[in-house]
Image 1: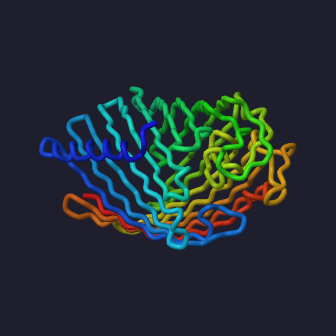
Image 2: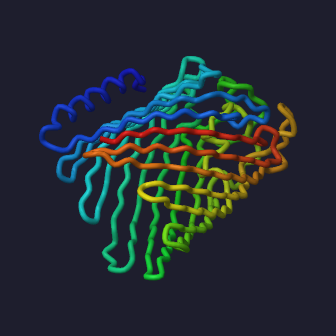
Length: 370
């Protein structure tokens, strides 16, 4: 397996290459930073709060229909410095009037105490716009491979295909919807292996675990006043086949790594959300969002306490989230600045001890595109 340092060198070489070619195309940069206070960033039942600072860099080079991009983010957890990590992504894409396709490589690199969460992801995608006059309709497909440097049990292949549409009417109403099919395969899943990192109880899993899932959503957006909009959305996802329908025993063996325990492919859900948007003057936006989601995890038992595990009862969660944001965009010559403030309140009610949590997030974000 190639090490992160080796891959880093290749990424930087590619980045320097397309920067050196910028005289023959368009080169765009973005630089952003955010400061966030979160009273429970890792969603523990007993909260641990911290201030989180992040610095983001984006570089894009476009030549005709071909584009290259490099994006990086470094996140600092001031009170929990062991959790600092660097994430970056390199990719290229090609687009014309009806077809877009691309390839991306991304990595997450953690501090030494959490380096077992290091991962590399390879993702290819395509999007084709169907030639309908009054209906915007797209066919989407993607294939993604995720490789963990140390947790081979979490290595997986994810394939997705779907179709989405939207249509606007003279009444200032827009209807959107979509359906998709997801297939996920864990290649080397063997949770009975005592060498797995973490505190382990009794587990039961196959040597190759897969799940297939069907999703759909519908959304209606309506302009109710000149500068006010309201949108309502319903979404549902169902597991239609694979191991996750039958497995009943799964331990908290990977700490707060969400690949198993909050992976959207691993649960069934019903979700409803409402969004109210208000525009003030030029490029000034106030937005409020309410979301309620009910989740069922057919592959997970529950924790009755910190260590006592019951595989005969399946985990189910009810999540409520409220989000308020205020943003202002400042237009400059050949560039712009975006300043935003946001607050998010999350409350997850679960029948499993480790997944009962509340979280409040306060965020200020500054973004400069040039």
